[in-house]
Amino acid sequence: MTRLRTVEQVLASRPTIEGAGVHLRRAFGHQQVPRLDPFLLLDDFRSDNPLEYEAGFPWHPHRGIETVTYMLDGRVDHEDSMGNRGIVGPGDVQWMTAGSGIVHQEMPKPLAGGRMGGLQLWVNLPAAHKMMEPRYQEVKEARIPRVEASKGVNVGVISGEVAGVKGPVRDLMVEPQYLDVRLSPGASFQHAVPEGHRAFAYLLEGRGTYDERQGSIDEGHLVLLNDGGFVKVQADSKPHRFLLVAGKPLGEPIAWWGPIVMNNNRELETAISEYRSGTFIKAGKAKATEKA
Picture 1 (cartoon, one colour):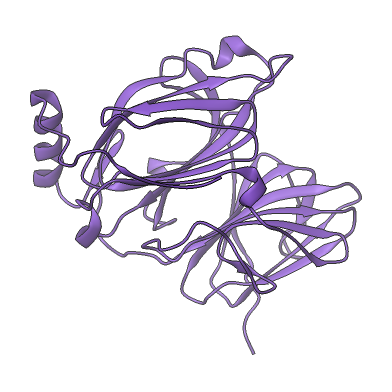
Picture 2 (spheres, rainbow, N blue to C red; picture 1 turned 135 degrees about the vertical axis):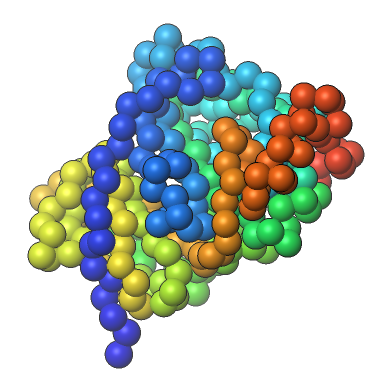
């Protein structure tokens, strides 16, 4: 019989400023690595005030990682140094594999009334794929299946599988699951996660119980889960929404400089030197797989 994943730790998201002055909340980052291997960072940039985000994330490089942008409100206009450009709108997902290197910018834009919000997850790439050709998997909201997993449980399947329904983002290195789960008041959600994979939940709205011994946990917190075969979550007396993310750990050394993550300092120094000398980009136009 598989084990229930219990709560290892609860982390409160912390306010920080990134880019050209974007106010956001960091659920986890450098200090929590490698405990969340293969995941590196999760930022929550929801806001009703354009002054907190309109400066955006101007041109910056990435190498050795994947960035996952999931928009809830508003949009992000993006373009890169290889000629790719597009819009990640409400409910859309962009899973960008930076691989050998991309220089890009991401500029948030609000809905009417100023509301804008989304999340960005960084996923590490294994050493054998850090210098792979860059690519995008862009998925519009209409192509993300929503599954009524049980009474009062609605799941958006971005990557992974729920009730036989597979998400549209596939062929990824760490075998990720990325689910947007919404529970009606009092509803319960149970979901299998492979043993040995790292799993966490990030609470977007309401409160939920992830471990009876831990008790109810409020929105704005990240729940790091112990190993086991399945997750069980129950909503409190109000609706509860959370992201459930899991993936296969890499167990490799990390050398990290801002948006570049390699395996050792020599590789990191090479990347920084190439960025400064203008030889950072190794590939032509990045491959884009858009599921409109």
